[in-house]
Image 1: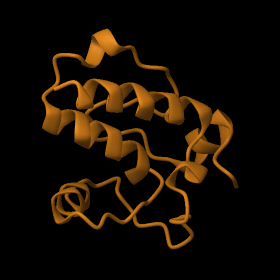
Image 2: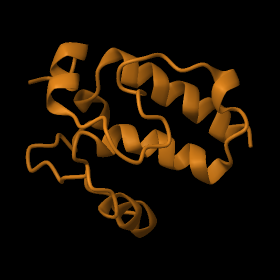
Image 3: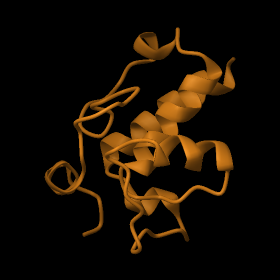
Length: 105
């Protein structure tokens, strides 16, 4: 599994539960739909994309937040050498969009 196809990610990732952007792994999001989110919400939305793949976070704030979610499971095979290797093309584009809005706040 290399995370590059929507089929793989949807079959391996949980999409039911408490998400800021529930379908950010399968649909391109627009700047206009997230522009009213706070900087904190944007950071969580961006990192929930990584969390769906089982990333363990060094920032205690993020780790505590995601551990409170029923869908979050740490992936022992997560590629920490390059976070983006874990994401599909839609997720990569969404991370960029969220980060652009996040940095403008």
